[in-house]
Image: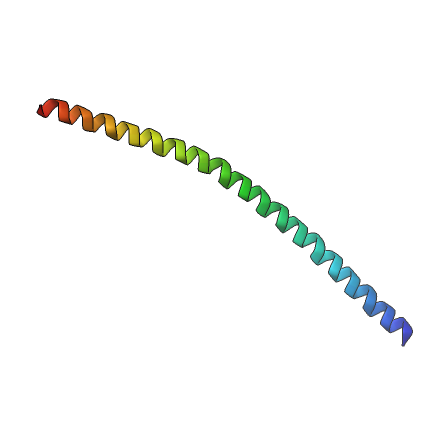
Length: 67
């Protein structure tokens, strides 16, 4: 009986270790994804600013032609 309990306990510990390692891998992956999203967020904001500036320039050109 004791040997069966030890075997079961060992199996449970093994499964817990596997899940713990997998959890850590997923956590690290999500952190990397978060960092990439933040990096691209800044790039998207810069691109939006450039687009808005280009739109303002085009609007000014259109207004100048009609004046």
